[in-house]
Length: 488
Ligand SMILES: Cc1ncc(COP(=O)(O)O)c(C=O)c1O
Image (cartoon, rainbow, N blue to C red; front, side, top):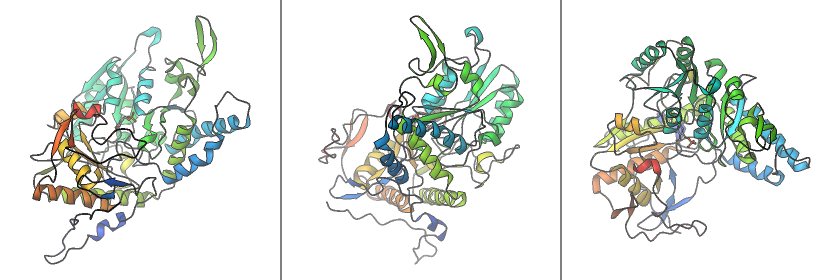
C-alpha cells in the first residue's frame, strides 16, 4: 500500500511571509477521544492510499474505542434478556436495564421519566406520535412543528392532527411566530430539533419548553444532533420528551432512545405489538403492560443499548470546556477557511442564532456562548454538490455528506433545491481533517477535477474506477446505491 502525499494545507497567514497555523486552533490538533477506525486508509482514484478524513459524523459517528472495548468485554455474556434464568441471561438483563438508568442520568431525566429503547430517533418520534392523547381514538390536540426539521421530526406528525409553521427570517421572530400559533390554542405538543442537522444551529430548547408550557402544550426535542455535542438537562430545561440515536453518539449497533413523561406513553398505542409488551394475551384479546416494555415488543437490542449507555458515560466524563473548545476550533477554522475560497457560500438558517440569548436563558448552549455544533453546510459555485463530494472522496479520501439531508422543506427555503455539502465532526476529529477539506476545495478551484466523473444510479462517481473494497464488502465503489434523502 502506498500513501499519497496530502496536498499542502491552507494555513492562516499572520504576515505576508509567514505561514503558521493560528494558535486559536491548536486545541484541535489531536482528537479529543479515540475512535475505532480513526486510521483507516482510503484508496484514491489516481492510486495510493490516504488516511480517511471522516467529516461525516453528523450522519453516523464512529464508535468510541471505549465503547468497542466494552462490547468485546460483554459479548461473551450476550444472551436473551428478561426471559432466562441462566447466568448469561441474568447478566444481559442487568446490562440492559442498567442502561436505562445511565441514559436517564446522561440527559438529566426526572426519576419517573420513562426510558424506552428504540431503533433510532426516527423510531422514537414515531413511537411518541402513537402516544398523543386520543381518548376514544380522537386526538385532543395538534402537533406544532417548524419547516426546518429533519424528516424524522416532520413526517410522523403529518400522520396525526398537526400544524406547521414556516420559520421567520430570524430565530427571535420564529419564537414569536410559535408563540402566536400556540396562543391560538389546541396544540398538545411542540416538536422541535435541538440542533439543525443541516446547519448545526442550536435552538433554545429551554425557552421553547417554557413557551409550549405557557400555552398548555408539551415539548419533544429531537436531540439526534444536539446530544453528541452538548450537555442536556431535560429536568432543568423542563423538556417533556427527548429522542436521540446511538449511531450519532459514537455507539453503533442500532439503538435509539425516547425519554420522557410516562403518562402519555403508558396510555399510548404499544409501538410494537408482540412478546414482552403484554400483561396477558388471549387468542383474540390482550391487556398491555405499562412502562418501557409496553413499547419494546420482541427481543430487545441488548448490545445496542449497552453501547449507547457506555458512550453516554464517556461523554458525561468529558471536560465541557475542552470538549467545546476542540469542536469550536475545528468549526471556526473551517468556516474562516471556506470564506477565503472563491465561490463558496456557508449556509445558515438564522442570522441571529450564533448570539441568540433567549429571554428564559440561553438553554443548552450557555457553556460556550456559541449557537452551533460541529456541522458546517456550504456549496461551491459552479459545481454540483454531489460532484464535489465524489471528487473529495475519490481524489482526497475525504468523506462528507451531500444532498438534501432528509430536510427537503428546509433546503427549499434555503434556496438549495438540488442540495449542498455538509462537513460534520466530533470527538475523533482533528484540525488536519478540516485542513484537508480546505486544500481539496482550493485545488478544485485552482486546477479543476483531476478525473472524469459520471452519474450512475443518480450519484456522481468516478468513471473507470478500478479501486476495490475489502473482500467482505461485495460492491465496488460507486455501485452501492444512492442515499434516499440525497437524490430526490
Ligand atoms: C436532527 C435529526 N433528527 C433525526 C434524525 C434521524 O435519525 P435516525 O436516522 O437515527 O433515526 C437525524 C439523522 O440524520 C437528524 O440529524
